[in-house]
Structure formats: structure tokens, C-alpha cells
Image 1 (cartoon, rainbow, N blue to C red):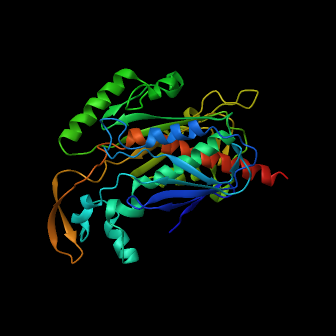
Image 2 (cartoon, rainbow, N blue to C red):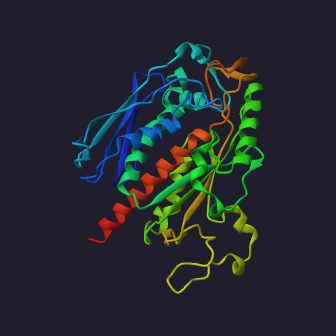
Length: 353
């Protein structure tokens, strides 16, 4: 399994959803960064389960413990080791899938690939793994305080926030449990997710992310384009089914004369259909992209599936699951974006020596 992410600033993770703990090792973090541990924990609190009525009710404090690489509150340049203890496993909730494969889960593919799988909570395939990424991203954010990264819920089901991000107040993102910076749309989203939950069903949505104050020159031509790295990061998140940056698919309906970003004298552009990246390299404008999340696969409704012997059987989801993963995915998107940006800043500096 590919358990390592990044080139110079890297994170290698371990752990399963229902194991004793999850955790990781962050390598390549520059020395001398004074860490704000409260801010790191706050990022985890934004992702943790049980935080509102529209997310899974698993109760985990998700308290991070740093084991190495930090002295007197500052990074030493050595590997940063951390762990998050699992405290609220209910493994018996998954006994019914020991020999059955949940539709649209990784149960079947893991079994076929490895011949053996941890079925409790999905094991390594569980989205609980993303808590590790949030720790890595929280450290990365503190290495680049001048760069602002804000993600928010821009749609749930057919409820869309169509206001351009430039007109939104990002300080309102955390003002509601939908994490949508528009109070009216947020209320609609919350009501819809609540209704879907009552039906024992789930719904997907879209997260928009904006990265501001990015220096010119990040990203490598050909196979390490900056948007390709961001796309790989976002498509690594559980339940993600789509990624687009800049004008995205809407740009396909425009003409070249409409889509071209005309330069200002200082190198900035009058429009930003390019999404802050041209030729795979950041151009100094805002980087913005969207990430599409499918509905969570576990539904509390009876569905057909197969067992390990190929028999068609009936099953119903059990346990504690998100009716919509989007609100909890906001800090995950930000975390991966931060790690990609830090990694590319370090690569850029290394190549200029």
C-alpha cells in the first residue's frame, strides 16, 4: 500500500479505524517553526465525528499526541511522530459484513487484491485515516502562514451556492454546521441532510477550496504540474469522485477569446479562468478548485449484495455513518492542499540552489 504522501515535505501514516490508534510520521518539516498546538487540535475538531446532528455520531475526542520532532514547542527538523488513540470502537456493528461485501465499498476489491481484510469499520479503507492527514496539513499550514487556504461547502445534493467566492465572507464558514458561508443556503443544506438521514439514506456534495497569496513559480512542467498534484491529493480522499480547477468543465463551453486571461502590466490577469495555474505552474493569482464527493456508501436500507462465495444475499447497513460527508471533509481538503503547497515551495527552493 502507498502509505506515504509528498516529495520533500512528507507524511507516512498507519492505523485502522477500529485498531488501538492511528498516527503518522511527518518528514522534511523545516526546523524552528513554533507550533500552535491549539490550532492543530482545532483542525482535528473540525473533522472529528460526533460534532453535530448531521454527521456520524461516533464519539471520538481525536486528541493528537506528538511523540518526537518537537522541542520546547518548536520543530527540530527531525521526524515528527504523532498518534491519535481510538477510544469509541464498536466492532460488533460490523460482524454482519465479515463474509459479505457492502455495495460501493472497498470490501470486495481489498479482498480480491490482498486475500485478507480488516472488516471492522473498513480497517485501513476507513475515512478515519484522514485524521492523520489533517495533522500533517495543520503543521504544513503553520509553515506557510502567509498563504491562506479556505475550503467550504458549495453544494449538497441539488442545493448549490452559486455566489462567486470573491463575494463570500470566509469568516462565516465555521458559523454553521454545514460549513457554508451563506446562512440561507446553509439552513437549506442542513434541513436536507437531516431529512435524508431520517430516510436511512445519504447524499453527496461539493467542496470549493481557495488558496490565496501563492507565489509565482510553484509546480513542475509535464508530469508534476501543480494542478495535477492537487488533483491527485484530492482524489485520494475517500468518497471523492471528481476534481476541477479554474473554469473546469464550464470552460469547455467557452471560446478562446472569452477564456483567455488578459494580462495587467504587473503580470496579474484581469480574469482568472486559469485558476491561478498556467502550464502547470502557479502564476500568483488565486488558486481555486472544486472537489465532488459521492453519497456515503453505507445506507440504512436493505440492498442486495454478494457474499465471499458469490451468493446473492440481502444486507442492511449498521453502525454510525455520515449522512453527508461534505461538512467534515472541509479540513481534509485544506490539509492536503497545504501539504501540496508546502512541498512545492520546498521543491522550488531546492531547485534554485
